[in-house]
Image (cartoon, rainbow, N blue to C red; front, side):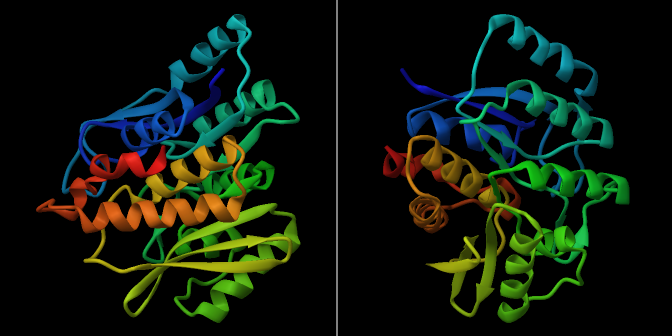
Length: 266
């Protein structure tokens, strides 16, 4: 029987991110993906404009219907939210569905390039910290790592290492800090058991949307099917590197051509 993962994220029509990235990745890895959408977007938020329909009022009624079905999840992956109330609903979902053996992966989506995303309030950031503390694994980008620690953002590797280890000391279980750039390489850094491991890939081109969602999805798929966090992160890093190398998108907002390398995950 296939293992099941609940995926709580938005659905964007263009941008190859969030649910349109995580569902095919999890599926090809042999994990059933069960989406609980937080919003439907015309396209992801990095484009010059977009239309968004928050699904706040639908989320709890939807998962209560799942409760009636008596379903169980082997893992839960959370991502983008539209407002503070959705974070409360996600917390309630976790209380309902997280069992002792359910793996919770939280992508604490709230910032990039040293700045919070538009509309992310101090209240939302505090709730994201509380949600992240419940997680077995969190997958922040470098900016989000520092916002979780309530420290000034930095691109210095010693500062990043200090920040990650400091979060472990505060009670965070395991962390994969994504997208550390150094010269010709881009790395994901695994923090666990008061230690860290730097997993490098070749840097190809500039920014592409959706790569963080792909990393989180591959990591979730890997640990759901029994791989270690280190193995899963190495797989995710190599997968995104190949996807970026195969990408012919004219705009970085269009995301990467990950479809051409999905076979690497089987």
